[in-house]
Length: 263
Image (cartoon, rainbow, N blue to C red; front, side, top):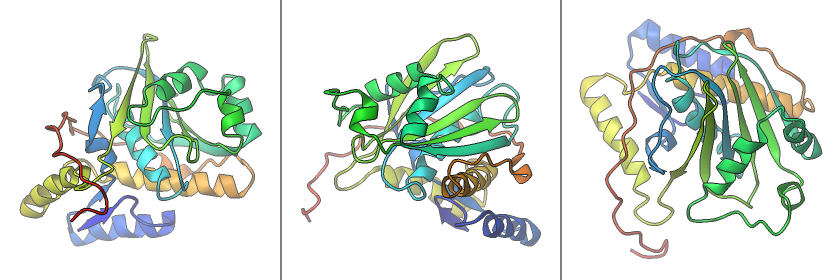
């Protein structure tokens, strides 16, 4: 069985689906196409390295688009030393509260700037400081059990790509755009289908479904925090530990894009 993006709208439903798949011995695959797509530059976190922080940029709705950004973060984070340890607490800040958290360096502003500068097809206009350009930005903050910090900064319609920047334990920082083909034939979906084809043939998911169980639970808790005005949420059920052998590779170049109204 395959479920696109998050497992369900709520943690309760997601956990029931996960538990039932285990009880029935039903192979289960889930997640976003974003971890699979082209990266410019073609970078990944180094397997087994320590990570301090990851910042991802997103846009549009917090739920259906936020899950893509969380899957980007998780595909980078799960490769760190010790594997995945689970999440301790989350919170979601909006508007001035979000920008003030970055100004106080609760989130590394250098990683934010690096992620913004990495834009490929749609550069962010810099006529004004970002807080003036997007006063209603949203910041989703995740604190992991092992001390890793991650965040998703949603810039509305100002920035309509996905990118991420991360800092390793030795202080070095890198970034990449996670590029999607926003024209026919939208070939990033074909990258997901290639993995689906192998999964349906073998019954073996290409990455642990625990990745998406965790991102689904993170999103649910982050939306609760947003609803409650930025309240810190500490969900004990998100202490999900797992190891992932999955390895990203830069896909071949996509076929030429065609206009959306073309046949």
